[in-house]
Length: 329
Ligand code: SF4
Ligand code: SF4
View (cartoon, rainbow, N blue to C red):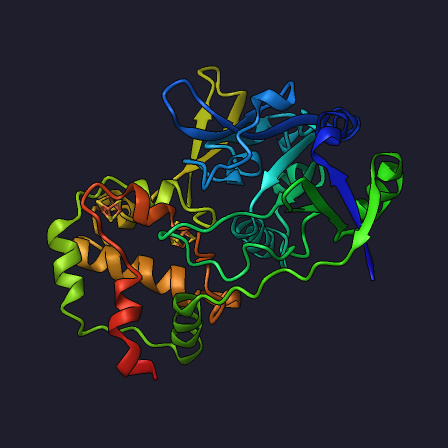
């Protein structure tokens, strides 16, 4: 079987061509050495060998602070008029594509979030295979998740290009002049033992409630929230209502919230459902690895390793699964 191949020396033309589909963004490295998705003008702006960006691509679909409704006394609540920006996100690794697939399940499920849908429809995804490091435990660094419009598998002198969506198939047809054919090279099998353990735990509903690790984690945690901010599937948000002084108009916003923060479990009257760090850790574990509601049993962890990298006190929730081998074997 033949596969479509994009040579390294055609990458610049490919990037130019992608701008037909929207403003091009991709992995870049800042002057401070931080890897971040951002605008890309030319090939030299890209950092193709990045491992993971600090902030995941969720920022393109759920901006940290976003007006979700406008209110006027005449019209009531209405969605903001502003269209979502047409954007192409190039170079997204499999774990982050799976993170977007999880967000799609949350926000485009039974009761679709119209604003999320607007942003999602305006975003074209071009995936890129990656080289896992010791923090990663995604099981599919070389495979194309089904939500990648196009997916590039890195070879020595270029990329195998595949299309996974209807949009991607149309794109691939237009891309033909830049491509050649090569013999198919099957992606190497990648197995992540940690991801298997994690899925087993989710299927069995294990919670390891008596593990001494909970006390250990809670004693060390600084409640900084970095692990949640950087997680590609953490989507908890707060809702704020800003009314104008004349009482005629208002704006409703959502902004990222964080289950590691004490205020996350606070409700009117001052009661807090999760006042202790141990409870907050358990809550994060239950949501992230076992799932809630319609997504119960669907782990929200895609193995990107960001939470393990950023935690200032080296807390690693996957230790629970290593410890739980006997429990869930
Ligand atoms: S829990 Fe950690 S490893 Fe899993 S997806 Fe979130 S940041 Fe990545
Ligand atoms: S990054 Fe580490 S210290 Fe900060 S909230 Fe998460 S577990 Fe706690």
